Length: 220
Image (cartoon, rainbow, N blue to C red):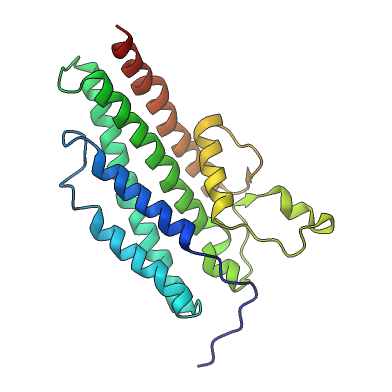
């Protein structure tokens, strides 16, 4: 069967691959008492998703390679997101118990790793969810957008035929975790609003509870 012509150039995958590598490093450097499972566990889905991402440009972004990339990336986000929540719950539990297992420095570095992992994981999730994911965008399948970017309304002002790329979703993930509210991109669907609420909640608990407690311990 003839491969349908691409309606948009293939999006570079190196920023996505770099993000996944950073997530794997952050999960590796977490203390053993905070890490979810053995240190090698995250590398199984990590290597799998990197292979799926690398296959997209090598195959010319076929529908099959894009579909595999989408499924594997979403599974990776599910695994890493669950591990992030478990680590955060453990940190809060140790604080409530007034345990001496984690000192102030370990608490601070672990909370920073959890916060950054949260931002990067949701950025990947937004990238795969909006407008049918990169596969839907590259083949121009008609999908309702989950987020409305300013460039969508500026076709006559220098942004004709504009489509968001991973960096746009990385910025969305970062601003959601820092501002706890929409900034330039507005959520348009219930799914987008729920995802942003979840990311903001994890970020809020990490910053206000864990980081503040770590700074208090280090300052005393």
